Structure formats: structure tokens, C-alpha cells
Length: 359
Image (cartoon, rainbow, N blue to C red; front, side, top):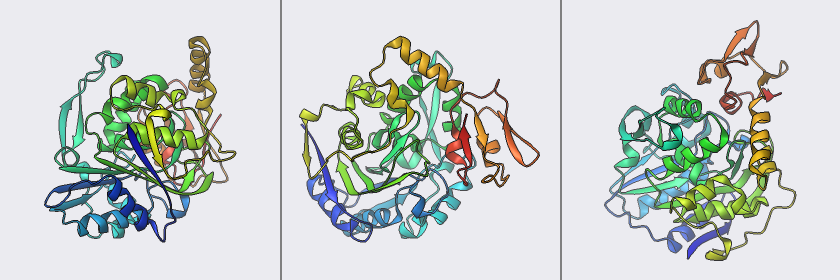
């Protein structure tokens, strides 16, 4: 039976939750190479709730140091295609200081591994994974409690997408083609290096159309587990979603990565549902027929990004980060070529002003 810890916390006392997580899931780190991977989607401020809070990162680093780790790396591959944005992201979010000197840009050194899922039909045969992830003796994942427009939630499984350097993540968005394939691909990436311990920042969560939504929610919890499927199932429950409605979890159980059945998960702490939690549009297809699901995905695929002229600063981040070069500047605002757009919504995720809307 899987176990999940749900611990009351705020950012001033999250070390207590970290101590409880290591007590329940005693990972041996003494003398070993330890990799700590937060969610560092993009450069942002802590109060925006887009990335793992620096207080949790600092608490985990301090804990691992106290346990005598042989070496420590703190890093992630942000969504940006340019590896140089890695350091900028960690500095602006406060995670650079929280890393206590153990930060490393893990995007500059990667190992090529076979990756030939049949659902991608030969569109890709290998991917690169950060060497620091693959060579770690102990891998600790620090996801954020968030929604996601393509996978419904962003937790342990989705956080593993960051083991891939940024430009390749954009390519995988492009070759996936639709949300179902994208979710299957996320599970297969997760399986490349399953974390040994997962500690989720649920102090300040995100609802609505994440993973870069402006709608934040005070939750006051830190979750932990040694199984990503189980902890994501509990996140789903807290969001008000049955785990079997989450494609990521269905595909992960099919692959033997864990069980999302809540009757088979021992929860320590209060995992009550969050009243009125706002879910992304993907939930509309949770119990749909295959025909209705196809219709929904078709309608979602017809949405196109549009810049809000009151918020857009013309920084061109969306243009630079589009994996299929579907955006270009026409005057002060970015404009989409609908024939090229694949509705991956990377532009919406990466916009530093949260100025991109879908219409």
C-alpha cells in the first residue's frame, strides 16, 4: 500500500514538514550524490505561485546537508529554450540563494537515451536527459500544487518533464500533437528516472488554467510520498477530481508506476477536498465518450493565443518560445499564424506578464 503525508505548513515553518517527510520516508543520503529538483517553470516572483517556493527548497537543502549527503545539486530545466535563462530563473525566484551554493545549470550536460514510444510513430527515437538526474544516487523532486491546461494537474509526474533540457521539451510538445499523446509522453518521461522522494509545495497552490495562472489558492499543506502516482492521486482528490479522471494517472498505472486507487493509499494528515477549487477546462472530458473527447480536443485545438494589449510589453518571449514558430511581432503585439499553431499554449505558460489569453 502506498503512503502519502499531508502536513499543515506555511513558508515560515516548512522545515517541520520536511522533517516529517524524511521520518515517514527515510531516504538514505549519507555520503551519496543527491539531486534536488524543484519546479522552476520560468523566471517569476515567489508571490506569483508559479514555481516551488524558495523556503521549501532551502528547508530540503538544509535537511540533506544535516544528513551528511556526499554531494548535492539543486537544479531544474525551466521551460525556456535558452539554457542561459536557467540561472535567471533561479535568481529571480529566490531559489538560487535557497540552494545554498549547490545550484547547477543542469541543462548544459545531458545524456541521450532511447525514446521510441509507438504512439509517436517514429517522430522521435531518442531524447536527452540531464546527466545530474540520471547519475544521482538519490533524486528528490519538489513539485508545485498546480493545475495544468493539458494534463489537468501539475504534480509529481509533470514535474519530471523538467529532467529534459528546455529546447527539447518544446520539440516534444510539437511532436505530441494532442493532449492525450502529450499525457502519455509525460508518463514515459517520468519513468526514465522515478524520484526517490517527492515533497510537494502546497502552501500556496494554483487553480484555474495553470501552470501559470493568476488564480492562486491558500492551501497551507506540504505533501510527501515515495510514489508519484499516489501523491498525484491525493492532489487530485484535494482538487475535487476523482483520480481515475486524470489521464496521467490512468496511463501511469497502466505502466506499473503506482496505484491511484484511494482505497489503496494510506494518507496521514488532512487531505480534505478544497471547497470551490477551480479546475482547468480539461476536466470537462473526465467522463466523456471517445466521440465527445475528440470533439473537445478539436475545439481546444482551434483556440489560438491572443495578446492583451493592456498587459503585453512586447518583450517577444512568446515569439522566442513557440516550438513551431507560429508567433511573430506585428507592430507592438505578437500575432499568431493559425495554420502553424499546434495549441500547446507554451506561449501562455512562458509569458512573464501573463498577457496571453486563448480565444
